[in-house]
Amino acid sequence: MPELPEVETVVRELRPLLIGRQIAAVRSSTKHLRQRWRKQWESQVVGSTVRAMRRRGKWILVDLDPAGLLVLHLGMTGQLGVFSAGLKPQDHTHLFFALGNGEEELRFRDIRRFGSATWHPDTIEWESAVDGKLGPEPFDLEPGYWRDALHRTERCLKAVLLDQSVVAGVGNIYADESLFSAKLDPRMRGEQLSAAQADRLRNAIVAVLTRAIESRGSSIRNYVGGSGLKGEYQNEFRVYGRTDEPCRRCQTPIVCIRLAGRSTHYCPKCQGERTPRARG
DNA sequence: ACAGGATCCTGGGGGC
DNA sequence: TGCCCCCAGGATCCTG
Image (tube, rainbow, N blue to C red; front, top):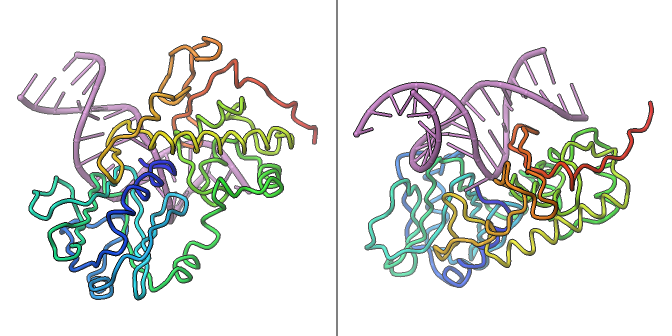
């Protein structure tokens, strides 16, 4: 569910509610997440204090004092929020972190349970575990790296954007929206892109994600931010979920196809530009 | 190397 | 009301 802008929003909204607070207890439901929460992690976490909260791609990193790292992934339907401990938990709440004197708790709710929560001794250990599987942040994409990553692959642009090892944090919505913004056909192969087109795509990704963060992400189903508020970016979608609706730029009906195993929305006119394929 | 499919799950919506 | 089928912001594993 949540992509970079939604995860960033959750982190920003939870930060003031969590930093400096001590984790007094942890409890989990009987149902497991994508990665099982281990009981032995609880003794590592209890008694420690939240020092910092960061985002890396679609991952949420909670730095603990004096040591340890809590790593959360929201999967498709994950939600994080701070609630009064007396408030009855919603269905599908699977992890509870009691805060301070226990009057409040951080809750991890995940209907489909594609999310995960794990504990790691430190950042280095986590980074080595995801090494090679997590590319640079979209905002840190070096033009040379990005051109090269596209130039060296025959995969279509949609598949490249969804590949977390190439660029971290882009998912189905923002891949489609970025390709529309860059006026590039999602079926184009990476190797077909000129340097100028690669730069255009990179700038489009940054612009779309930046604008989406300003709107606190997109709420189309289950997503809510760390404060429980919904996002607003769904009102600015140009192509995602707009199958058969007129393109906002040229009125041509938006097309939906299956690409890289995912629904892919684009404007056949605005994004119809193709670079002739080189021979050989 | 890459596409495509299946898998992990639950719930919502459409068609009947 | 109900049933059946398809769909869904993700990641990963397997096959061809």
